[in-house]
Image 1 (cartoon, helix red, strand yellow):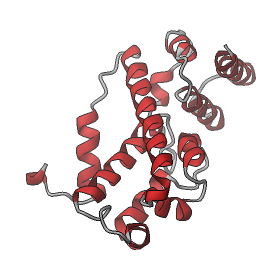
Image 2 (tube, rainbow, N blue to C red; image 1 turned 30 degrees about the vertical axis):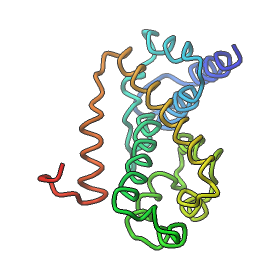
Image 3 (cartoon, one colour; image 1 turned 90 degrees about the vertical axis):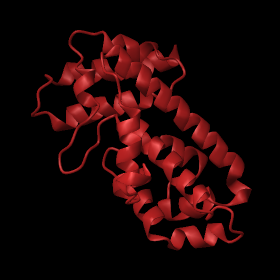
Length: 200
């Protein structure tokens, strides 16, 4: 019940202060962040309530971009990107190296990927699981992700991110969207890791 009151209370507060138009960028950003917080909650009643509210355009808040994207889709795609990064590092044998926690932070692609998955953004609430389980600082987080001493934290992080992706998929289905996860995986492999098309 506390989660429901948190999300619905914030929505009512925002709605009372603003009329929802494309000109109210701060308001739209705050509402998208509200959805990001709700995706962290086991009880999805708030999201399903918002999804079925005739004056709540949640579908349009999944992807937002003014200079950079910050819609609540990031709650799912940033978690997916972390899964992919760790799998690529494992598949290429990097994680098996005894010095992985020292080597990986010096590699260009993981450092670049971390800027997106752990960056200092102006609407960063999709990173709450990463901050909670690993670190707020991306420079500190990358070595920990590949350090056996932090394996329990990484496991808990991945478990929570998987739950968020599941809830995001459920929300999008409620909004009438069949989210294309395969496309997102291929997009990440092509552009972040430059995988040639014939390999995927």
